[in-house]
Image 1: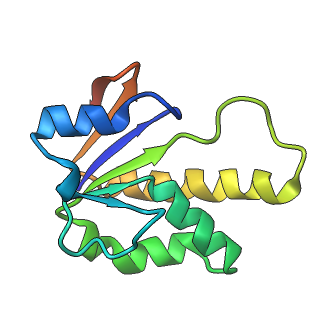
Image 2 (image 1 turned 135 degrees about the vertical axis):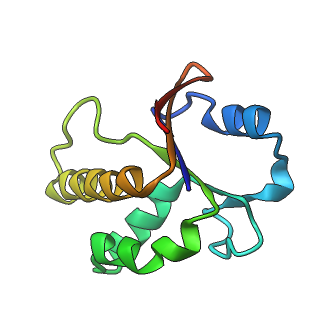
Amino acid sequence: MILITGGVYQHKLDFVCNNFKLGKDDICFTGNNLNWNNKKVIYKFNDIIKKWHGEGLNSEENILNILESLKDKIIVIDQIGCGVVPVDENERRLREITGRTCCILAQTADEVYNVMFGLGVKIKG
């Protein structure tokens, strides 16, 4: 698994397409479809975590249950824990859950990249 992370609007998807020679057909856009079986990239994985949270599911348990299905994927996830702390308790909890889930993904990943301004820095692998 390869984990790509970075702030919102930092051109993470461009980085993935350019550096791993992939096209739009290789990407599962989580807003439209959660069937990533035939896709190489899962884009905006944080939307999946948000969906699980909204359904009252434990994201840390869910991620451990699906790790095997992610082993050959490139996971793209936004860093949502930076910036102003939300007033809403549910949003704060979502940030914490997303961070914990990202830690599991990063520990399991073969490679991890942090992307800023479209430039990726390899931080693992």
